[in-house]
Length: 502
Ligand code: FSO
Ligand code: SF4
Image 1 (tube, rainbow, N blue to C red):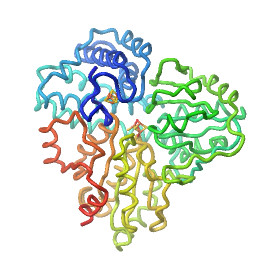
Image 2 (cartoon, protein in one colour; image 1 turned 180 degrees about the vertical axis):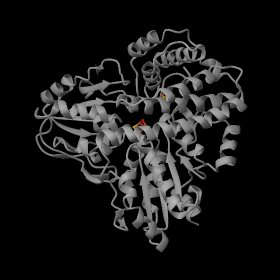
Image 3 (cartoon, rainbow, N blue to C red; image 1 turned 135 degrees about the vertical axis):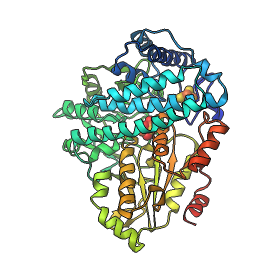
Image 4 (cartoon, rainbow, N blue to C red; image 1 turned 90 degrees about the horizontal axis):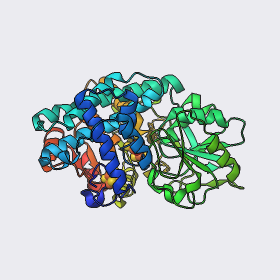
């Protein structure tokens, strides 16, 4: 196998015998065949529905689908000869680098489009771009000159899909409002729901109503507490645990059912594997998969059989906090725009940091906790995605009537951060790069790649990226990113803060 699509890739180079994520050699081969079949279909213009295209790509993202049977079934449905993915891997290193950026970015776009389509939104235009990108990945005649514009276009299309997803989520579930969420689990049966799919959470809340089963969010589901149409269910009680990479520890022996709607699923340990369920593009051999009918009865029955805790139990954040605050999407932040602009003008707020992105297992990710802890008291931290669990239970005080840490939502809500940045730039009559705003991004998987491409498409400069740089970025492509956009790797929190504010 050869896979280097995520941040935890073996030796910062590539997983070649088994995935650090737990993906087997055979699963990797099948995922390549699925990608290769979708590439052939895109090149030939063969009939593959938008739904199948998106599900097929989503299934190849990191920590989504480990189930060989499910991947083989997708290959059968695509029903095309495989383009050989080793053609990409064996290409000139810059071509390999740009084709990988394009493919991984397209996978991220596909994941977001999948969530839009699930709420009934039209993604035909997005899918047309994805087909174009896949066809380019499979075109051996493409070089740097042809690939670079397509990579930038990926950022543009991802911006469009994030905007559409914001519309889909807020039109369906209301505008998020700030809320403090407990990390304490009440006695009694409960289900923990993980992933990014708000529609699945809504269905689960409906199906558990009056059943004596409480629902807790996990990981990227935390921001759902802020949506009026989800928060209105009294049995949506709180949040369980921290970010995805801690699940094997946090789920061990817990008397509850777990439902994964999207990434990030880790191979379940024996002590809780009998109570993990998957749905949509997620899969793992031996786990019960809830199909398109979204009948969560097996999940509910499992939760009732396990019965939950007898006493309240708090699973604290990584800094020991017992609650977390979320719901500062663009709606909530921009309703305070006047106060924020005045605070910047008066000097009460000196700088904004967007410390966002994915969490992961690498020890170097302490950087993000250290960074937030060391920021001066007159600065605001905007955050989103699962990387926030490194610091979202910290109490670092308030500024101008707002908490200093503002959780804008999931990685799926990156549009909120962009919208706030653009609104601030307009209020100050300057460009985004002239604002007292610096982006400190943590990346892990392919959705983060597509978000990074969006920021580059918007011309955002001087992003700091960590904890390591992507293995698929060649020295020449890195040079291009450094020279054109000033991207820099993270160093230490103290040095970076000094350099930014100095
Ligand atoms: Fe995290 Fe996983 Fe949201 Fe990612 S849960 S790492 S970028 O899949 O999707 O932030
Ligand atoms: Fe390795 Fe990441 Fe690929 Fe898994 S997804 S095989 S950890 S590079």
